[in-house]
Length: 274
Image (tube, rainbow, N blue to C red; front, side):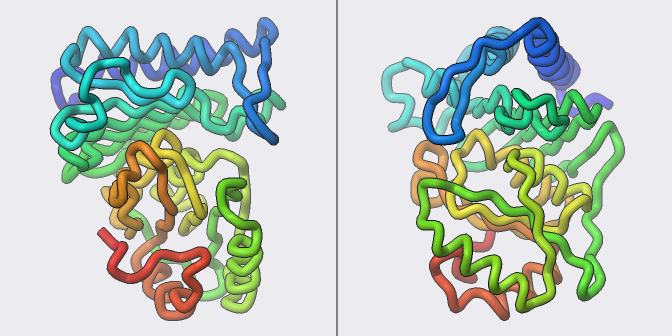
């Protein structure tokens, strides 16, 4: 399927990057600790570099924002970021899962122009899942177009992330609220992939008090293009500072909005909807 002239090369580059991560892991990893339960491996660094090297010849005037290397070192990037194209890369989301040889990790790439998410790619190599979304053109999993369906009452499952950048109390309050609403929850340790799985219906919503843009953007576009609702991540300088993430199928969103929005500690207000 060809969405635009560079699509095939981008898909090939992202799949090659995922294979590179698998190969490095198979041959033994060098691991460094960035913070509490926050690790980086030589695979993260190699994959990010590979992706930048593959994308730059296709889009030489764009910038890059990567989890490991940060922002492209070009003058005026932040000041002009609302005008220029920025490729936002998480080389391995779910690094701890990756290190433990669990299959729940992914490569995430998003493209932002004029404060709009234009493209989103999420690739889970161990699961053979390639997600793609293009603004106003739909969301796809392994070439099949996605359309979100609503869970039956009592069967909804929300994906959760726990951010150490926000107080624990908000997370615990949310667990109590979901329990009272008879809504199940799961925490799999890879926010980007859980967002992708909202778009495909494996879970029906996702919440995290704070995500960085490289974890959030591709998945949020997938959900929007599959027919879901998402919070306005790019508001308040979300590209560079991160933001709260909330997403769900439409009827589930409405139910949660009715029952949960009195608690500002963990959910967005109504006017945060896009």
